[in-house]
Length: 123
Image 1 (cartoon, rainbow, N blue to C red):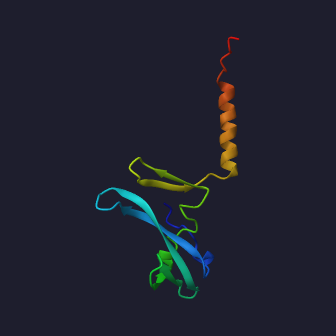
Image 2 (tube, rainbow, N blue to C red):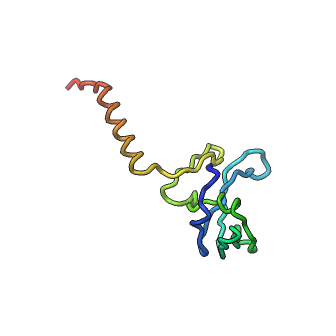
């Protein structure tokens, strides 16, 4: 996960950001990625702090280093790829590739299919 998920200048009051980090699964040593909502109430650009509510709990003050670790998109949004293991562990969360990446992949697939001969059918 990148160290800077959202820039401080983009944070506005009323936003819902997401705190995403590794956590244990119950009473085991197995790790998974979990996510909690963080509601932004006020932002102070002078002191680089904000009053927030983490997971609908009481309001507290976050400084800039904690705020820049939050994400503006949820791992449950459409267009997000969540890689899990058979045990239910979430091991990776990423957005689906954009149009440029999809187009580049389709061009690579087309080039690969031109290189590979197509077997002739025996009709």
